[in-house]
Picture 1 (tube, rainbow, N blue to C red):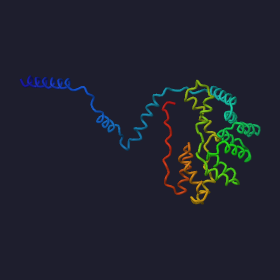
Picture 2 (picture 1 turned 90 degrees about the vertical axis):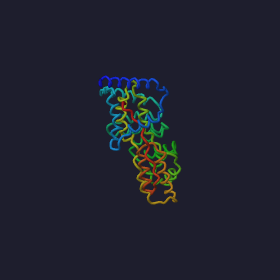
Picture 3 (picture 1 turned 60 degrees about the vertical axis):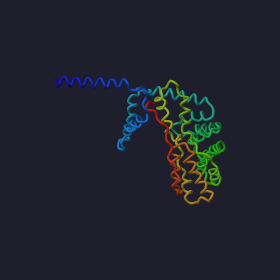
Picture 4 (picture 1 turned 30 degrees about the vertical axis):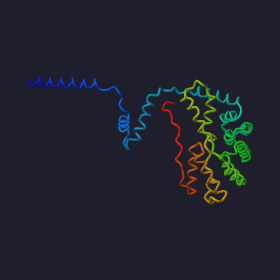
Amino acid sequence: MPTRRLLLVLALVGAGVAAVWLAWPEDEPTAVPVVAEAAALAAPAPAQAAASVAMPVAARAEQCPPVPALSPHDQAMALQRAVAMLASGSGGDAVLALLMQRPPTDDAAWAEQVRLAALRSQDAQALRWAASACATPACRRELLQERLRLEPDNAVHWLAWLDEHPAAMDEAWQGLAAARYWREQPLALGERVGRALPPALLPAQREALLQPLRDQPWAASPAPSISLANACGHYGPTHPIGAACAHAATLLLTRSDTPAAWQQGADLAQQLGRSDIPPPPVPPPVSACP
């Protein structure tokens, strides 16, 4: 009989739970406790934070479909098409086409072609790239003067002028003090060449062709200015050069477009004894599957 009594009790309890569940109102429960609970469960321990952030990316990477690599022949054909399209274009595209065909040894005729194409381009970015083909200071200064004419507000050119032509330092310091931004356009190379590559290429294949070009010395960010570092530690903020140094640091920290420029600005600001150094810009997110 105790067994029957236990079974009867369990049956009554089950029926009561079912009745309560059926009678429960259908209104949606408030989301606040759920969100709070989910956040508490999702929050990683400090020691596990890096792993919890990295694992979703790795998991997505494992799901990326394999991308067939281009054969050397296909790579050469794709780059040949890009060079032909750039060469038939206008402005800085013609300069890019020539730089992508740099001879293995010094070639004065090729260097002259680059210089003339850059001067015709009316493109400050192409003029900066073309300086790598110059064999003489006169050539570099000619291209720099054209860059200054086209973009007088760009501090990149004034710092280059300061390093390239010390005899004109007064002009360079004045131009730097009046500059409004630091613009290197780091994406310009990939965008220009990318448009000239075969459209059927997959993103990873396209990136494999573009990265060696970005690694070329002529495409790199300008080296930190030696003249700027040497001069800025000797003048106070009331001196014209000291004021130009402070202005340059602010531009590099807040109006630049590359990590290298921000780092140069942070180093200069520390040299000037400043504490108002903003954090570096956050790079754009990178897709796990290129």
